[in-house]
Length: 183
Image (cartoon, rainbow, N blue to C red; front, top):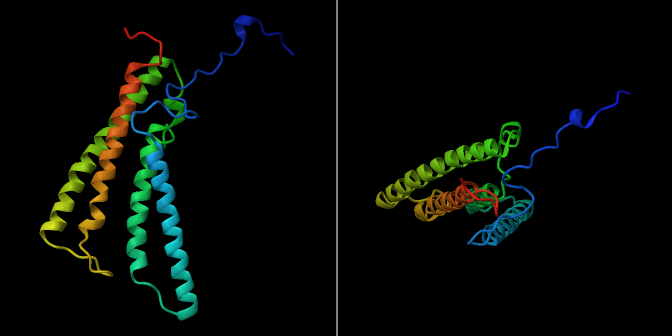
């Protein structure tokens, strides 16, 4: 077994700019999205379970359950996405995002979060147009017959929330680690 000198010792891994384990200090508590996700998932499970029971015992199903389930899944996905970006749990290529010098990691994080911000700002704007169209043309849902904008209004709201959360993440990354002076 060859002897390794101190100079040949492997370098310690560099910590990522945003640690995935700890929640960052945010102005609006992440518990809002956490509890929203819990409530939505519980509601979705109850609705689905009731529909299964009704089908089993009556060979009928509630027509409205699919419509409500799709709506709940969309809002649930957006709430989960919001906290995923803040907690740095979103999908990314870790070999690119977490390797290299801290400066390189910061640049990669700024680029990635900038792209996310651009996407969700665009999604907010386009989904507002969708909601306005559904409102103006008085579209109704097929199963229940309620205005479809009642469902669609949550897409721009949640996309705007993700945009704001991502903007906060960008600000934290740009400021750098606590206690380090910016050059």
